[in-house]
Amino acid sequence: MIDEGAAVDAGRVLAETVAAERLRIVATLIARTGDWELAEDAVQDAVARALTAWPRTGIPRNPGAWLTTAARNAAIDVLRRANTERSTMQRAAVEALIDVEHARSAAVGAVPDQSAAVLDDDRLRLIFTCCHPALSMEARVALTLRTVVGLEVDEVARAFLVSTSTMQKRLVRARAKIRDAAIPYRVPSAEQLPARTDAVLAVLYALFTEGYSGSRELVRVPLADEAIRLTRLLDALMIDAPQLPEVRGLLALMLFQHSRAAARLDADGDLVLLADQDRTRWDARMIGHGVHALAAAESARLRFDGVAGPYRLQAEIAMLHATSPSADATDFARIAELYGRLARVAPSPVVELNRAIAVSFAEGPDAGLAVVDAIDGGALDGYHLLHATIADLQRRAGRDAEALGQYQRAVELAPTEAERRFLRRRIVEVGGSPSSPR
Image (cartoon, rainbow, N blue to C red):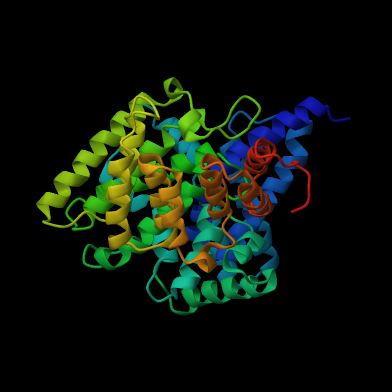
């Protein structure tokens, strides 16, 4: 009989290991076999085996290495059953796969060659392949969400507002195009980098966002850490490219946001708003790295004689939050101004929504509501933060009855239970029942 406590511990470690290692294992298997679906299925099989084995035999000393081996063996089993010339070659490549964890252990104390690390990183190759210009933008985003970020097909389908079967077919077509068009699985040459960088930056930020404020869990630290690591690799790769300021701007933005990870949830797993967070729990060292990265981004911008791009501007906004001693001391007028500049560089209703929040703290909730009123409501109607923001501004303006309906709509749309619990508390504050129908 399996001990219940052991099963809980195994499940927790497995979840952490999958978040930290899934991308590496999938990328490595794709690099060795060229078969995207096989790689994804092999990792899922390895996770299923771990769910059964770990509570019974104990958590392995190196969970990442265990999953790598199990996924490799699952892929070999499939290829052995296929018994074709191509599968035989693929099987040989997988059988020759060196366990990355063992290699890391053997290299303890060695000083890595950063340039070699960039070129040899299968995860970066995978991201550039997902973002190849031969694929439609829709295919790039869908493939990235599925393969890089690791969302399930039904979650990707919801993001595109299509059925799961429709999205499955789109993913199959995208993988087939990569295979049939012989799209190379590699980091592009220096001449090709500029045309590919914007899409890759978007992918890396999507990866970070899924870890920092994801669709399934509010905080998934290993996934956010991986996005930061890959952005650092990209920074080393882009050292002489005009996109370097934006790469460094994105790195700074991630570091500032991630520095608050420990303070975003309380002991019960409930959401803590930025204004209410214990700032002593923010990672001061990470904030310092963010300040350095932002300064490096500005230096690179001057070197390439460019204008501040969207990631650079968002990083400056994040720095104003991260370096302010308190919520009351935050320069919201400057933040609102930066959001205005961001709206000109990268116009978006979400940017305007964030500007409305900054304006509300600089000039009052009614001023913020005026900015929200100018936003195309249809573009964000299914976005829970639109309704939560309107409700919060109405509550602060003393319009509780109007706020109630907006909070209830936000609860219906919120993707995580932690957010839903927070919104239900707000419903009670404005005189509603947390369980009452809208």
